Image (cartoon, rainbow, N blue to C red):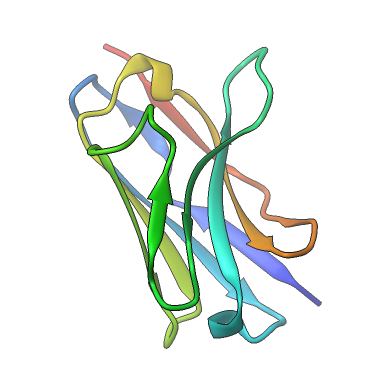
Length: 113
């Protein structure tokens, strides 16, 4: 059974940093593309970043240069390092396995002074 567990969210001031983690189980992690999504209050869920099996990353324009996604296949975990955070980055952050409609429960990120 596919299981994804996000952690690392919290309250941070503008300009601050957070590192999110997503621990995966129930499938051969190294074989799959993984992605991070976020959903702000009142808005649709949007893609933030993705990483291929080989470690190639891509980012939404809104986070490019500030966020870095990585993976550790030995730990079955993906990470999202978020720097220079802005209030617009506030939302619930989810990781997702692709292909397949498998999501974690999400972790709340709030950027506010």
